Amino acid sequence: MLPPNPLTRPPAWLRPIFSGSEWRGAPTGPTGRPRLYLTFDDGPIPEETPWVLEQLAAYQAQATFFCVGDNLGRHPDIARAALAAGHRLGNHTQHHRSAWNTPRPAYLADVAACQRQLADLGVPSAAQQPLFRPPYGRLTWPVLRQLRAEYRVIMWSLLTRDYDRDLSPERALRLTLAATRPGDIVVLHDSRKASRSLRFLLPRLLAHYGDLGYEFATL
Ligand SMILES: [Zn+2]
Image (cartoon, rainbow, N blue to C red):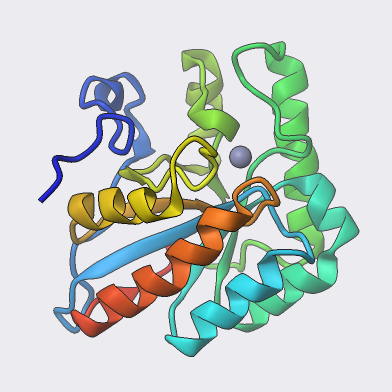
């Protein structure tokens, strides 16, 4: 078995720094089955997201999509299809901004702009707290403090590195299979850049963990 790649799992020292954000989910559901929380960042786009929805439907898998507001504005029909299939949508800023090089007021305004797009789609529903994931996983303390009052700030426990073109899809799959544990929040991307790896990884992950009795749940 391969050791987990250091880039695949976030280093332990990061988690206390970003306290108040979520790095794992419950390892089992009400039925006692092990769970994984698949997340898809950067969509929705017509080239990838409908394909992802088809793959998820084939396994009755539920997932969470962290949407870029610009894409929501262009493709609300795809977002509605995801909601109709029982998936959750979260906020990934309006323009995929980095909190490290965007002034705080502009960053928070960008988050709010994305949330308005989500609200137009009825997200979140009344019983739910809105979800937010920072682009690039980048946050600053003052931004986190402000956002976590309103949002569940969702980080991750496993990067598939589907966006990494220097990593072959086969190796990305081996690293992911070696590292995955129940309760993991797994990052994938419904983006053009990640397409080659995503299309290799997703059906194989669904088949592998489906066969092992896992359920794929929303956050
Ligand atoms: Zn992103």
